[in-house]
Image (cartoon, rainbow, N blue to C red; front, side, top):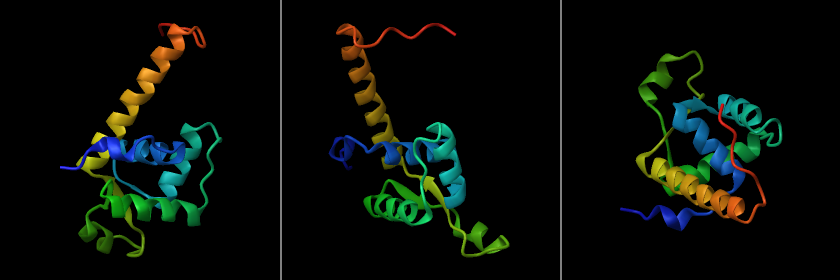
Length: 118
C-alpha cells in the first residue's frame, strides 16, 4: 500500500482536480469548469495543462479512467471520463488534514479568525 504522505503537499490545481473527482466521475471539460467555479476563477485550466495533470495523476495511481464500456456507448468515444482511485481519496484526505493543521496553527497565531457558524 502506497503512503499518501509521499504525494504531499499537493499543488492547488491538483487538489482542486481531485476534489472534483471526489464528488464523482467527470470528463475533462467538466473538470475544467468545476475547478474554475470552485476556485472563484482563480484557477482557469486550459486543455493541454489539464490533460498533462490528468496523465500524471493517472500514472501515479491517483486517478483512473472510468468505465470504458460506458464511453463506447456515448456519442463521442474519444471522450474519457475519470474517477478518483482509493489511493487518490487517501491522498486527498491526507492533504485536507495537512491543511486543517495549517489553519489551526494560523488561528493560534491569530493570523486568521475562527470560522463563523452558518
